[in-house]
Image (cartoon, rainbow, N blue to C red):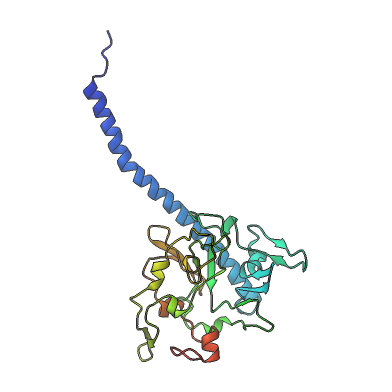
Length: 270
């Protein structure tokens, strides 16, 4: 007669399986998260490569973040699309000009809660926004204006906006990053770099009442074990932990943006 398992033996086996599951499931989850991070890093490198080729062809002139009005929008993604040719795009029915909203394909950040436009955004001041602006609008800048390209973030993974569409840039304005506006001219250090308001916007908006200015969709998002991928002006991409981005070192570029150009900004008149 074949001996059956006893209740104690079955309970021991179940307990062993439960212990193994408790050990392995977090490992599997971390492996899955690491794979998403690697995919996003690859996406950002490909997008950055397209941007670098654009800069080479246009004498190092940084593209606008967007221009146009109404349903006619030409974004930075459309401008570098010929070098990437990934994700959907279409010619405007009226003008025939190609448009892209950086959706799908390599434009999608793994783990982003929806297929919203512009999961990745460019530096607001360095990539001028000429949406609805009469000609000639805001001028573009040459890369030579960036004093430390290896330190300056050009492109970042962002949060979801509170609406159905996404901002094509991330905010670069000091008061969106730190609580105290102003820095020490003698040391070059921001007076409130340790007080990073941008960390409060490490989020994904869920409402549909309008995309909040300088909200979730205009700040970096740290989806991968509290790190977020950043693309820098010299072309390299790296993951930075939440809290490590410093506005003065990594965001501020002297001489770009409306406030500096018009001499209206007390913290660094241009």
